[in-house]
Image (cartoon, rainbow, N blue to C red; front, top):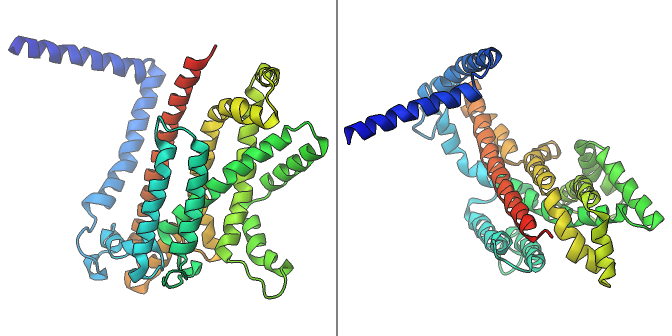
Length: 368
């Protein structure tokens, strides 16, 4: 038994050393770069670890728990955690947010099941359900629920609402724009191309300012559209233009024979598109779609400039409280926001990678 254990240990050491030589020390230049990278990680990582963990304050939920404001102050996070999650949503009504997110997750289950069929219907139900949840439950004013104005929405809750709404509306609109840009009708192709190129060339902040400041000037007197809804529509226009180009590139990658095969079977345009073209094009566009969705999830922070406070906005607002004022407190809040966004974006990236592998395997099995 002892000899086998020793043999295993001696066998693992050569394998580990072989892996290190092959990946990190294959050439003198590789070895020098590896050592330089390790030195840089040590120079940056050691002070960061000491500031975030070793010298940080962990216990308590009041400003007195952090006497030294130059170190990380995690009691600031515990004290303002509800604000970071819900914004200014009334504490007595936050059960509506929890219930709405739970219902949204239930509606999303059929979209993520491996063997689920008819995902188009499931996607329609998800979008319609999210709209009803936002209007009836989160906004209120129905069934005895008090109205909670969108100006009180904030924190990570607002980030989720923005990302789900914009992605759910921009993806189908982007697909339609991509199909229009590939259309054989010159006028339709010209209009879709001009629309895409216009909005892709305009910064997001400019579009938001136009939607918030200039758009009401052209509306009839007495007609007011909610500020959050205007911001969501503006982000939907931008994101649909980005997604349209991702889908168009995937459409161009399909062999012409796929279109001709659909026509030879007697399928009409929409039948060919829905049954032959899009099922092959969307898996090709999926990496770019995932990347755009991750960018959208992060760029919800631009809502801060128009007075809507998402997670980052709530962190900035809380850090400006005189009771918590300090360099270490604000830095701790920003680190918390960065870790929060990183965790969700990394999870989305990994899930997108799994879907890509599954779709690639399915395409390989069905290729003829």
